[in-house]
Amino acid sequence: MADSPVSHHTPDSPPQEEANSNQRAQMEQAYQQMQRKMRMSKMSEGIRHKIMVLSGKGGVGKTTVATGIALSLARMGKKVGLMDIDITGPNVPKMLGIEGTELHIEDGQIFPAIGPHGIKVISMAFLIEDPDKPVIWRGPIKLGAIQQFIGDVAWGELDTLVIDFPPGTGDEPLTVSQTLPNLDGVVIVTTPQEVALLDSRKSINFAKTISVPVLGVVENMSGYTLSGTAEPGSHISMIGPKGVPIDITVSSEGKWSVTLDLFKSGGGEDSAMELEVPFLGRLPFDPGVVRGGDDGVHRIVAEPEGETAQSFSKIVEEILLSLEKGDTHHVKIT
Ligand SMILES: Nc1ncnc2c1ncn2[C@@H]1O[C@H](COP(=O)(O)OP(=O)(O)OP(=O)(O)O)[C@@H](O)[C@H]1O
Ligand SMILES: [Mg+2]
Image (cartoon, rainbow, N blue to C red; front, top):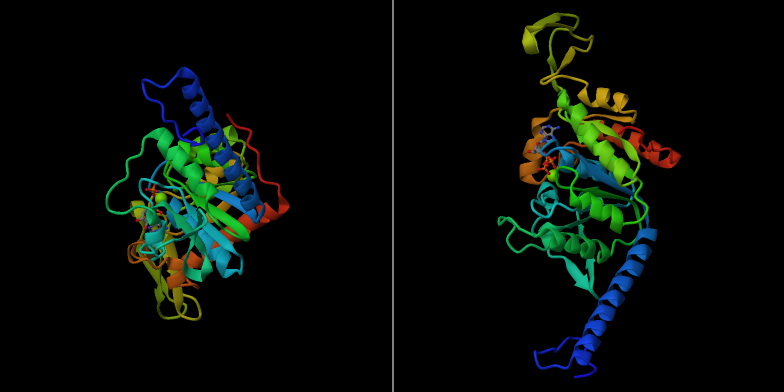
């Protein structure tokens, strides 16, 4: 019994024996932590860039943007990993149509699932027995699970790891920033409304608190594009949002298109300017994104040359520029 690492203390055990087994348990724990840390630092060496996707509030499109960035990078030939840290509502696998995947686990390491364009995906959803049942974790247990989860994934060599989070600036991104060394930066997702500034400011201040640079702001659900064909050179008149008249001249090829600002435009760009961080670009409001989210076929996969896929390509180019230059913005505001 003296050799067992587990405490066998009973009310009758002598205090010395209890102290010894406590010490042994602590040593065992410290050893495991050390091993995990070593694995983590080795794993981290194989990953060139690590990007966090955050937003000040929920439902603005973080998961859509995180999966879009990952797919867009993969289409450019990069080796990409996507980690879903949203424990209570992990929906990355559903968005990518791989939710039923059984993960391969070997020697205590978890091997990611393979998604469209070969992206490696890891999500708590793969480890939860009934994905329709909400998981309720108490704070420290949740954070312990995240740390363990991160440390045990066998990513192999990656150009970029994209990390999706639950809404807000809570414990999850903080834990990840303390667990994963050398994070390259944060991509902030916001919407065009005026509250965007407030939300982006929250996320930017958070990035400052955890000393991670801000790669920039993405404005999601920005405008809705209508297009069609008509007599070349003819004029089309319509009434836009707030009753503003819109006049369009049809091109010589007989095509026309107009982008309507459904909410307001420029909230993301304005906040990037005001908060002195790069503006990475806009993503249009696209009903196909909602359908894709439900069907498990991301818009980039369904329509690789469509407007949304093209917007993602531009955003990813901006991100790559910032990453290559290494001049991501350490934020000044308070
Ligand atoms: N550009 C877009 N056009 C149309 N619908 C969109 C767009 N971006 C996101 N959506 C839709 O908005 C909803 C929320 O998107 P998503 O799940 O990506 O947001 P989230 O910020 O990750 O949410 P949560 O905070 O709950 O994690 C989804 O139904 C998604 O399909
Ligand atoms: Mg999400």
